[in-house]
Length: 157
Image (cartoon, rainbow, N blue to C red; front, side):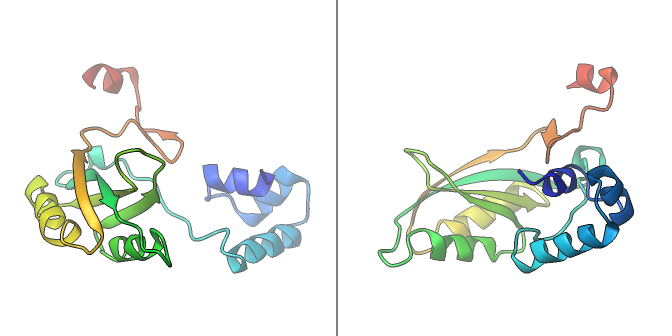
């Protein structure tokens, strides 16, 4: 893997001068490489990882598996595009599973809101033939970052 991408995937807060020093190249080279990655669609943005377990009234997350009949000309792509178009869908993945084809991470204010989203939006889509929903109870690690701050947190979990 490219060393610059590896560093950025762990921490996008580094300045270009810090990245240049870490990589032993010029700052201009780092800037050029980042711009090239953006143009090629390799870098799609930067985000901040938030430990939602510590945010009051942060809502709930659910992992929703979808069994889908693929379309002959586009496979799973069309249905994945529809699923990812909903604002409360955080991510969508094609899975290699014998039971489900797509996995969507969905954020909502309540369990009931997500249940309604699944029953009225996802399960009614053309080509969706089944769903299974699992609610996230605790985040232990996300984006390669541990959300366990201390031994006390670990004991409480």
